[in-house]
Image (cartoon, rainbow over all chains, first blue to last red; front, side):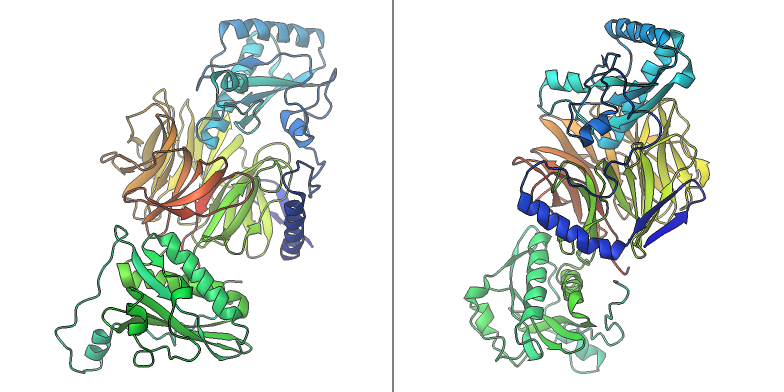
Length: 189
Length: 443
């Protein structure tokens, strides 16, 4: 039942058994309703699928990308040899104290010359989701540019933005918002 | 699916107000008959919705129950009507008639009903409905409709009747034969895309992946749905053919996709981020780039095309803070239209392209505002909670938006004129966000 279609602009995706899937989905939804608010994993299609590139082969206890950690109900931002940096509200400039952190991160990358880093931009939960994805992209790019000026080759660095989708905390407080406005670094070899 | 529904349009009897029908047939017109009253939402009108008379085949009244429950739900959502409790109804709809002269208007005026819906059902291989709207005070028929279709299309018939009823009573077609798309975390932690009728009927789960799915947007025919998903662990745009159940990944080499929307002509305006800058591009439906619409060292997101013409609105931080801009697909200079506040995003063009709704940071959180397309006449519509993602009904009378209040986040519907909330469009566990409101299904 898998049907594929090729878009001129790019790659291919597919959805199989749409109408039949609807019945299965209805059953799944009913089952979830019975399960109440438990955070048990649902095991839908795509479970365990991982994209190519960085994130899954974490180093030194890194749990992979924040999204992979979220999928596994893991602790976001845990592990990894590099340290997060943080940003002011609706801002993407690297603050002085975070420049020091980036120097430490750059030193580690210099010493581990085969390591690559994906820089994740994150935002607090205020404002539209789409704007925040764009803002997170700016934050990730700001760290990438900074690391490049410290001599890290651009081809060892990549960026992704999760906007406000993967917060570390959910309280409506200044402290929590500050924790969420961050760049997180995911290292792979 | 929808196109298979046999609305008996050709045989649809437009039973107009009695005076008009007589005039058309050359009969004498009593000059004392008042014109149709145009009622406004500032005054809620009591309406009665009687069970449908079973002419044959609906002995368990299932068709009647589905039709009346759907119609009552929609009339309540409209904000124009209060539906009189059926337990108070005096007449037995199974023994009385359903046209003028076949029942007693006094049974309804004694309940203070201003309007009355009555009708009949014949259920065989197909379901046939005859439904009429009466002005109780004037004891006349205002309009009638006849529908033929399968039994699972009865809800759609009720939504179409609700739209026709609102046109008859208010002068403007109602917004209920339309679809809602939204994102919900119901049943788990992951944001998935759903569609339903506006009133919540026929809920359909579009995505099923344990990642992040965002920003559903219909094309005008509502047979295509765009959304952004991280299901390959990186964000990509997907275009779903809702009729065929096939989706295509749209991946032009323009950078990381951030969001997208359909133009009325079926093209796509997409926001893509490259080297930290996010710009807007016009794409064809398969993702081929037609032109760059913005080229700024800044964020440009939330494209919202108007239904008529080439204008679109978007949000940009090119001035230093996110503000709303309007430009056209021809690439004329963007006009900034918001100056008050330091965080205005998520614009939505009204269907007549004269107004723009948006979310802005105000005291106590984000609120929904509406302004003229030139930036004049700005008004704040919401006052409480945190409110995001405004979208317009195709009749231009309502705005749907997501709001966090009373704990969870739900999608609400309000009157664009004054911000009066007429109802909640979603319910249940989880948070519901990112509403999209389709054009009328079938046009």
